[in-house]
Length: 495
Image 1 (cartoon, helix red, strand yellow):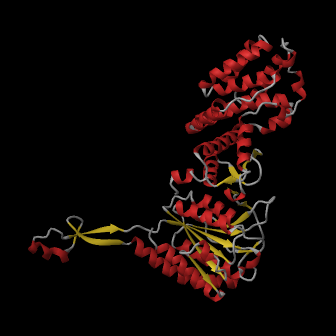
Image 2 (cartoon, rainbow, N blue to C red; image 1 turned 90 degrees about the vertical axis):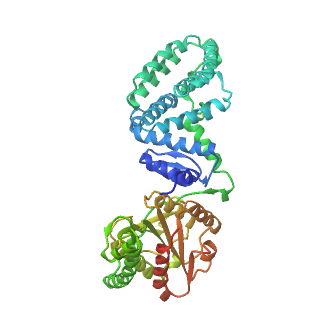
Image 3 (cartoon, helix red, strand yellow; image 1 turned 180 degrees about the vertical axis):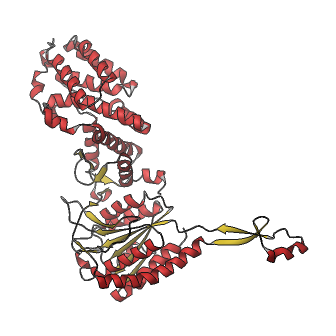
């Protein structure tokens, strides 16, 4: 597994790790941040960031994951609250779901506290019209429940509200206290929100400029930013940085995948038997015990003569050598240029899968690209770690070569493996769509300790991506032996 400090400094892997912890899907790519109740979408992000920006990303994912876990999204469809009701409900609901998540994961509570300080205490408050002073007081009050240091700002805003709508806060505060003590679900939050708004609308202001009635017909852009809106704005700003500093991550897609024929399966078994024998030998050589003389252990009669020389080392003791505790991920290029080669490539991928499965090494096989989804690159899983190989290993060859986005997706998967070694093996016949960003991902992989090997088919440019751990072949006849030799070198190499 990738060490935590390295993972936490890499935004695509950090996002995936947080999503995995919360049991939600986090996708990266596009111009904006949003959540649809199922997936958390982040915009194109820089591959790394300073502690402040990393905190914003962590906070946004934790916040939206809490909504996915605890918010009843159907409630809004059933109740159809107006914009103002939804806004006040969201202030209360944000606190409720964050509080529940913090009780499950105390670290999330610390993330929320740091986020509130960053966005509501350290940052200056915007200048707001008098009609919005009460909403800002409400937002700051609820946020101060997790960060008491906000009390000063709450008091200042309360004084301003009291001047223009005297008596309102004395009537609303008991409702907030009830809500803080008992708010079991999203529906309860909406009921409290409507109660607060009713009091507000029925409390005449001393200043006509503070009359809240016009807000009933306002849209969301006319109201103060809540925490999610501020986070979305900050993340969106990052997506406007120069394109070379940003990245997106491929998502799982699909494309037609055919099964190997009976003849191809028979050929695969023949290839596999030879490769499996070689790998078995490698595996045995790596895990068999070395036997050494010792002062303790099992008595060896052949060493008894040593007693005459005064040597006490007449025992044998096994010393286990480190085994091949390694996860392997085979990444198969199935772009349009692979059309004439896909049959052999799929055939060999299957042979590798059979061989590694036979010696107990976890292997995943991923084809790319899949069909694009709304401009987002995709990949197609052919085999997951630990699964028995099947016959469906012949994906259609079509599309471009979005290697950067797919590498990020594969790194998200392999970095979570428990094995101390992770190996990524790339089989391709062309240049990636963006060689420079692909190099950046490979540099990140090396920094994380993930070993990457590549085999190019009539693709000499592959050696510029991986000068030391890549090989280019010019004929398909050379592919099987080259692939097997590269795999063997990778497995016997010691870090």
